Image (cartoon, rainbow, N blue to C red):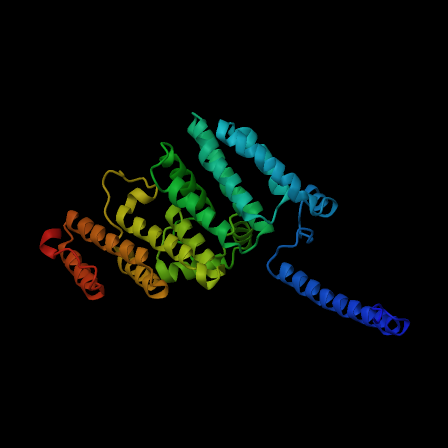
Length: 362
């Protein structure tokens, strides 16, 4: 029987072969690592990326702790969850601030932190002025800090818009009238009126600087919003939610545009339906009329979203708005406009969603 085994001759070619194979594997691994690094940079997932204009503490933790920041942030998140369930919102605010410094690129952290300030902590304050400070703190956290580390993040834009839309414009908080007045007065001081003259603004560098640096209101984008959906009153919170929805729509990938469109048509719909009630004015808010100027542009916003997304929920929202709009017009004796709006609704009606007969609405 012939004895099996590796001969000296075989060893002479196996060793070079293994060396060559190792080099090939190392080369492939190097290419894969380079591609992964490029993808991490592209999608902003590199934890140790230098953050421009970052405060010293954020810059230090970014470089010094590296990947361990995530572990520490997870531990703090567990503590935050426990405190949140216990209703200890003030300590949650402090820990959330630490977490945001550990993970400044995580938009969920900024959203949670701002939500906690604007919704949970604010309602603990019996004094309405104190409530407004916490609501405004939530806005400034997202707008002046969250966007610093996550420029162009649709999530931050939407969260900002949501505070204006639901916390300030809606009636879920007893202090909502004060919130509206505070915003109204603030924007009047900044812009002079609710309808800025964009041509004049270009000759006022001090105002432009405050608008762009503090409020993140870009005059060019404001004008685009006004042209497409307005004229809008910039003292009104729903105008600001429209603006942030538009910013989200500009920066979101195509498959996520709906969230921006939804905020836009919801804000426009409420601005039209509620009229004076949507914005602080010196008039008696018990007497209001729909904002007729915005009717056709609101309808266009719905129809554009339906065409773009082909989403059943958007169609349903459009039907609900048209029903409410016609009812509101009838209630205010604007019968001719109600009939014209109904005719427009008829033309865009889908076979599987029949509309309410006009006589029933009238």
